[in-house]
Length: 232
Image (tube, rainbow, N blue to C red):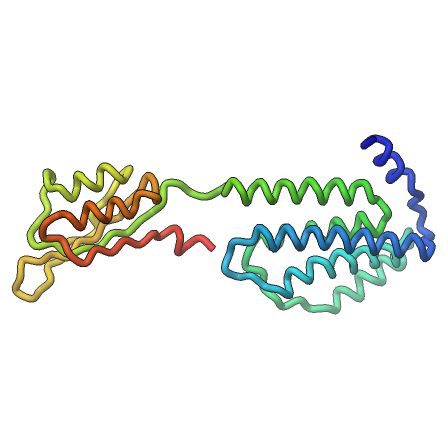
């Protein structure tokens, strides 16, 4: 069944002369595939720089490129003319997320395949790409583990190697480093401590903080997950 559909799609004539029906089919296929790309991007977006216009642009880019391919056909002269016209345009929008660049390239390629009537390549390529994007999203592929943490607290007195606080940190962290230990400067024995942590499992953060709060003399505990702030 799949081989039959593939053969039918590949046997569609791809001459440089497009009939009105060929152009309509090409633009319709480009629109549907661009819509699929836009939906997958929308469903898997996890950053802070979401843009509604960018999602809509994915659809428009796919359709416009398909139209460009229909205009060019097999004419080299027309292709050079379009290149000269596009060279006049200046794109000043800065794309900060490299993932967005990948989607733009995909929209361009899908539009080219649709416009040149290579429907099998366009459809199968888009479906495979969407499956890959969904897989990367569901598996959180590329997320760095363990999580980096920054712990600050006040303690009356100095912390030695056998103190309960280092013992608690060893249970929950793969490693920890003392960054600073500074006296409060108000004539008391209170010291401000700052630790860099490599936490094994961020789900146990509340339990770690609860045990630290149970240590006598500790106050003003603050835990910052640095990776969550840096990763967008």
